[in-house]
Image (cartoon, rainbow, N blue to C red):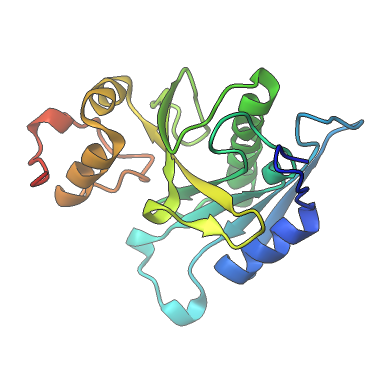
Length: 208
């Protein structure tokens, strides 16, 4: 139950995610023994990829991961209810995506365990995710520029983007929005685990 006195049920979060993203092709269920008033103990990670009808090119394949269950608990601060979204720009075998999903769920529980505020744009250090082991920082930002799940109250969808340490330092100086603009303008797929380190300062800035 959050500060506003409204409890979000796991089932309601799941229904809202399916209505927004469609039916996942795979799901990893994570359950923790015992109950906790603060830390989520029931978390699913849903997996999405292009459908056969989309005829998506193999060289630009993607796999989406979406947590379901973090929003059964509330965080301190303005962003109380969250779920995490992550994209991987490649086809990922089942074992690999499940390893990544477990770590993504663990990442999502850290703010609850340590009771720190989550913001709509922030950089976390000393975070290593499978497939992205060379990048030890992650950027949290509002998915799609500001999408929320249509629950009551709404749940913030936070995009998880692994970055290199040098990129994280530059992002802190120029803002997440500006950094992501430069990635996109330069045609760099920031969700590609095999991409090279980028000097963001050398890329064309936005008009603002």
